[in-house]
Image (cartoon, rainbow, N blue to C red; front, side):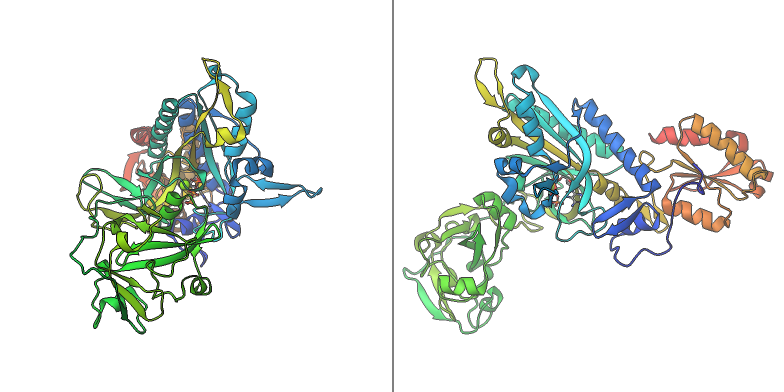
Length: 572
Ligand code: ATP
Ligand code: MG
């Protein structure tokens, strides 16, 4: 490819709305352009890199025995009604109407479509196991699209769906995908680590996310360097001890706390109730019903855990206007000891189990209660692990201190069980003649997000540092004179032909620009190898070979092609 033939609109400065380095570089290196918030065009070089990522995914999915299909982006709502997700996933669904007024959903994922297909096409255990995958556009009505391709409204996902006759079979399919993902990300030159994950609106009971460590990541991960335990903070637990029981007086005591509405204020003079002896009372509206959540004063509620444990679809903090008529007091004086309507469920965090000598709100503005024993004085509907783990807590597996880091989720594998197959009728006749629902798994990779994560991980002050496997071109030929009869250009053309014949991806920078401009652009786009052809070094019989992340090597003109091929094969 010649530089002047394609379109590589590099920019000195990134547009102001690009916040993170990978987003800036995608724009500055001329890889993508924004059409609207969360909606992008791939320019020629961005598309080449994207296609290479897709190809790696395809090869590894095929190697793992998955079969490629392509499902429609337009999905009829009926299948979403049948799975029960029309409502639960409603906030991300793009809904469109055709000219007859019929509604369609734009595919945010495809469990419903593939399970419908399986219901129609698979009838016998003889046809199983099967794992179908596709690489296609997905649409999600993200409220806050940001960071370029990281959280877009329209993006490319590889999604796969496995169907097995038994639970063991499904577990084996899961393991195969887990291994394929490990290979895929390694081949993309991306350092990832798997973590235990929440299953969210997809459902199922076993799940891992593949994370790229990055300060700019939207996820937090708790991990243990000693034993390897790692989990999304939405799921992570720790070995932190429960609240110690103490000797207490027999009766609850009410005391005045005028103007005290925070855990912190109550922990100070004159009250001096340590945060870890306070019960924090939160009121949430979970699936339209008010509920009380009790957490220790020094802990934070983890809303994802709350949803996962209670099975609620949506939850939000109740407003003051909702709380006052319910409990008779404003936030800051709330509790679950007195004045709690019988219809309100009370969920308590496990760390409070057995706690006594606790202080909590009296459901009367300006008053608290002490000597509260949670199991004696509060009617707890259910106990769950609801708190967010923090750094330094003992690992749940080995007791060593946990660390927390930020990360980007690039892939997600789920064991689904029979949730979708039962609802959508994906059953098969087993060997014994009985009809059973297929046991499913689903497996996603954010292809466009992965591409950006590669840049987030591979860059320096000059631009992108691509791994050879996914670089838009592996080699950039940079003749410093471009007249067709000049020696640099003639040699560049010769190298171009020879390298291309050896299977190397080459771009020839035939622009009539100053060397500085050409070098800067090639660093910015990040081609792994640049061959500089200047009259001065050619006069000495040499060319410059500059690996993107290494020093210049001077190589004899005749040895250059071999040297480049060697660099490439050494890396792959
Ligand atoms: P997130 O938590 O980041 O919203 P998710 O858990 O909802 O993602 P999945 O349903 O697991 O996403 O989708 C599979 C993969 O698709 C994710 O691991 C991620 O890499 C990618 N992905 C999801 N949403 C987006 C988006 N809005 N833009 C780009 N990629 C996305
Ligand atoms: Mg996910």
